[in-house]
Image (cartoon, rainbow, N blue to C red; front, side, top):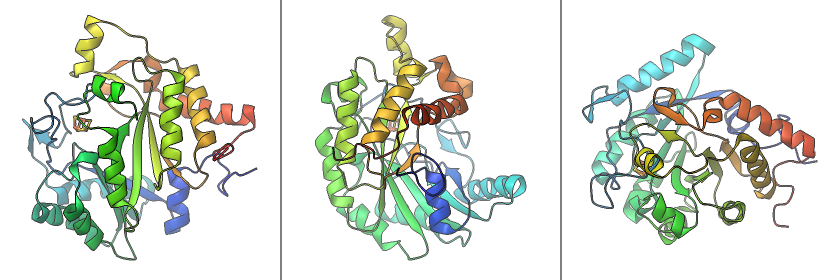
Length: 311
Ligand code: SF4
């Protein structure tokens, strides 16, 4: 049985970080004040239907009020006090973190990279918001001591669903982004959403199969959540649709794990956070329960990540 040496039936991010850095590494989330081309009109307006426009607690009226340096210090100090943390990854999470000019990107990414306690950065972005120049810049910031991750939101390979959720990019945009990112030493993580309205089990598994064959290092699997202040809230109020049940979600996630390569790091297996603006489905708010049910299902099936990879 292929279970990693940390005894999980899937290759979780915590284990990957332990293996790579020899101790626990904690993620400090950063709002660098970026916008999103799917909100400001250059790609679309209103954003993806599940995306809330509030940004983070570090901005007021869409203006950043806490410097990146201060956010890093506050994040590190929280983990230092609570769990005596020594190593950190800075996660540029809010909105589209490559949506700026090269000199601004260099300045911003260099802030955490120049911190000796930060062992890597992770840059969340859209596949249609990178180009060769931006990737050359990111590659030039790599050193043998620090990792740089780029996280591409794909969500689904199905154009009908991409249109429905108002992503404003195509599957081709995504495959082009992977093509120009691979082979540079930049680690690639892809986000998908399970439970999109009107997607069948077959469609979800087609997305999973597709990413299982890509030259990527990690995946984040999100459960669809309905949040206040989103376009999806309006859609749902006008025409309610069914959310996936927790039982179904767990089954599908285990099906997905079985076909992913054993070496692909699983950075996330469900949604997280957003308690203040969360609306539905109710089970999504209890992340621990979802994770436990996934573990139990893996055990009950006596299965593991990669069992059917390439089959
Ligand atoms: S989910 Fe990401 S790409 Fe979509 S609107 Fe929000 S910030 Fe932009």
